[in-house]
Image 1: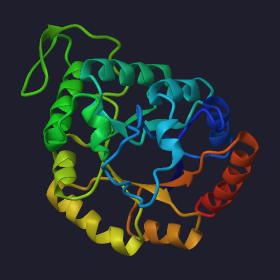
Image 2 (image 1 turned 30 degrees about the vertical axis):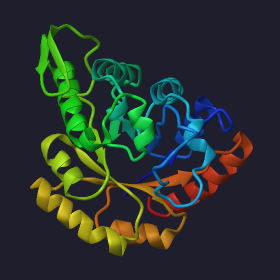
Image 3 (image 1 turned 180 degrees about the horizontal axis):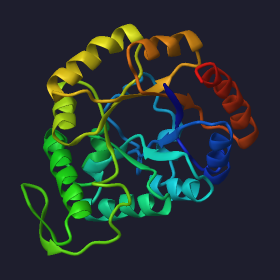
Length: 275
């Protein structure tokens, strides 16, 4: 089983380059970072974690600028979004950003995607929350078309463009892996249609096992699983290993550099037991 880190990179915590170097020095496999363009001050949508929304949600750096900085100081670390809010993104620009990251990183980009939960945030981008699932699916298909076709053309309900040229094309072929976030059959059908892996939310091994079975039933194939926000507990990690999780991501709180490095040392000590 592989070990990575998921976190919010903000203006108040460790900078991207030192974070990337520290992860690779400690033999972590991957870095997945969150995205939120902004958070509306007046918000009706409840925070899924309960209670007040943590400040990191509205202080996140742009994910692709951040991951590009990480990529330039690392050689092995996978650099991924966990997750990119495609329902708030122009698909043509996003296709170029991911392909550019894949080029800069020499083929280490991972495109983690999700439909999002904050209705007011997506409404500010002109997205109707009631159709965000269909919008996400269509934008993903358009992005893959831009990555894989010399003369890309797409005509759908939400995305429409005549033949275009767009470079760079991704280094990874046919394209960077798409990790689909979320749970339930809607997300699992998305995996079946266009996903390469499931980016599962945190949950105990006992809770996750039937979800993995259902996901693979809907997808119709053996889809690898990366688990977001695993506790710092070796016994819990053993449980995930037993049910066949490919990768677990420790949740790294957003902290200054010295505290971050100490926390990563603790996480690396747990990961070392599985090597």
